[in-house]
View 1: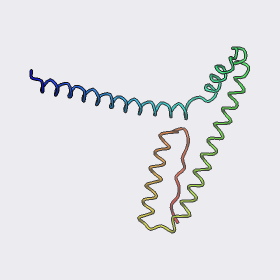
View 2 (view 1 turned 180 degrees about the horizontal axis):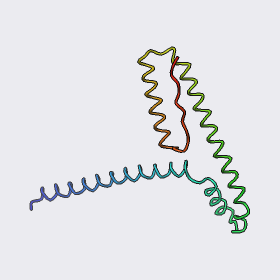
View 3 (view 1 turned 90 degrees about the vertical axis):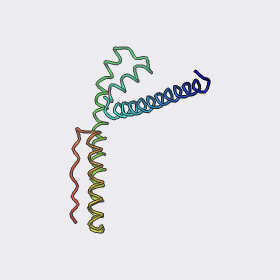
View 4 (view 1 turned 45 degrees about the horizontal axis):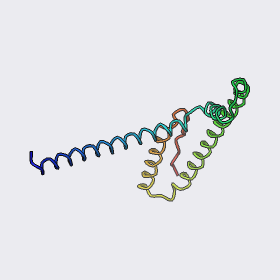
Length: 139
């Protein structure tokens, strides 16, 4: 085996190794991002609060048992507030679109419908337990 062929083989192996590493990093980061966002948005809030307080305050099991109902109640209130806020945002956007519609061309109305549908599909995949009302685009 001559020297040039040897260096070409080494360079080829390095390129394949780097390509595999980059692919692994990309797939890993994509998977981790999905996991982090899923945990952040859909995780049990009271469990996360309980774990964090237990760890940071060195709570005893008895203390954890006593504060658990308080944390559960707070988590339920926070979740309800999040749902209410989301509903208010959807209502404002729906009303904004209804008011805009008379000023748009037919083509622009169709594009707005597509944007709303894309947004609805995106939110449906992230929070399937919540109902997203269909906005009316009639002038």
